[in-house]
Length: 98
Image (cartoon, rainbow, N blue to C red; front, side, top):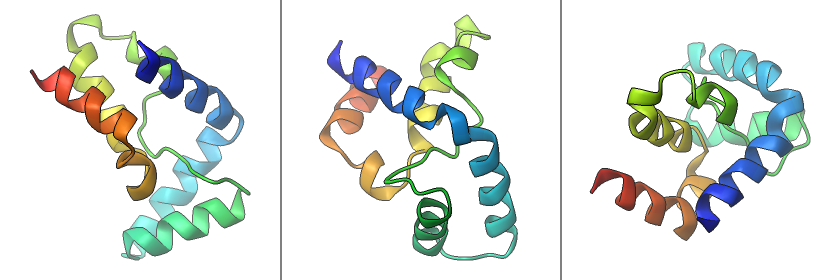
């Protein structure tokens, strides 16, 4: 249960800047910048230590209950490299896929 609590807390922290982060991510992605440059640019611009580029939030994950597991994996993939590689998200991904 702890991984979901942690992910929910991260989602709450990012809520205020979510729309702006997504817009900036799309603009930077269109410029074909590297993932590392995009991550650093977004974090610096929005004064964040991490961000999420998935279109999902914890609230919108519930919009399609039959696809919850797949959508949760998509949500977790929206975290940049260092956040996505944390042991919490890796363990949760393994459990969802089994």
